Amino acid sequence: MLRALRVVTLVLLVVFGGLGILLGVGVDRLRGRDPLAGAGRWAQALWCRTCCRVLGVRLRTTGEGIAPGPVLLLANHISWLDIICLAAMAPVTFLSKSEVRGWPIVGRVASALGTVYIDRGRDRAAERARAAIAESLAAGRRLVLFAEGTTGPGDTVRPFRPRLVQAALDAGTLVQPVTICYRNAAGGACRSVAFLDDQGLLASVWGVAGEAGLEAVVMPHAPLTPEAGRTAVTRESHRRVSEGLNALLDGAALSQSRHMSFPIMRPESTAGDRNGCEHSDRRG
Image (cartoon, rainbow, N blue to C red; front, side):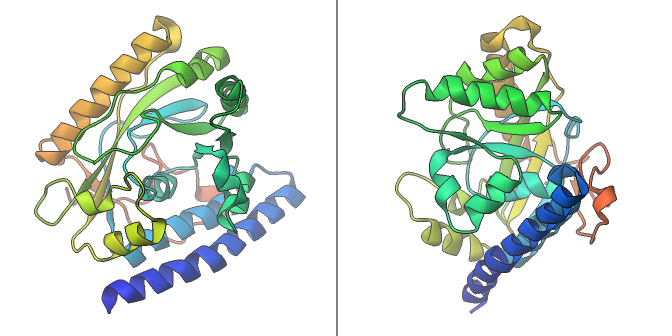
C-alpha cells in the first residue's frame, strides 16, 4: 500500500509540480530573470525535494560542495533519480537525449529550465550539443553532463567519454567531478535504483518506491581547470568519481556528510550555500 501510495503521489507531483514550475518560469520571464535564479528555481527545488520525501529518499551531501557557475559537472549516471537529487541540491541544468523534449509536461519543464539536448544518431549531433553546452556555460550556468553516456549499476563507474568535455575548454570554464551513490538500509549499493537496459520507467519508479531506508549521497570533488586538455580532465574526473563511489559504499566518506533539510525557500534564497543546500544539519 505504501509503495502504491508513493507512486500515485509522485504522478500527481509530476503533473501539478510541473505546472507550478512552468508558472514560476513564466513569472521570471515577465520580470526578466533567469529561471534558475528566480521563481522557476524555487518551484524546481521545492518539487525535487518533495519528490525525495514522497519516495522516502534521504538526501545527503559530502565533499567540496557544488562550485558556482559557470561550471561543467561530470557525474556518474545511475537513474532518473540522479536528476531529482542534483536539482534538489543546487540550480543546475542538464544535457539530455532529444526524446525528453517531447515528453508531456516533463519535456516542457526541462526546456524551460535550460536543458540542452543531443539528437543521438544524427549527423554532427555531438558538435551541435558541444556548442549548446558551451553557450549554456558562457551564460554562467552549472551544467550536468553524465559522462558515461548511459546508466550504470550503481556499484561501479563506466568509462567517461571525453568528446563533450571539450565544451568546457571552448567556454574556458572549470570542470567538477561529482559522485552519485545510492545506499540501501544495509549500507550497500541499492541496485533497485539502477535504471538499466530496457527497463520501463514505471517499473523503475515502482522499484524505487518500494525500497526502505534508501539514501542518496552526492559528493562533489575539487574542480579541475581545463588547461590539461579534455582527455586528461576526463580521465582524472573518472578516477575521482570512481574512488568517491568506493569510499561512499564502504562508509569511509560519510563521516563529514550532511543530511539535507527541505525548507520552503524564498526565490532569492535559492543560490544556497557552498553545497547548494540552504539549510543542512550536521548529523553526520
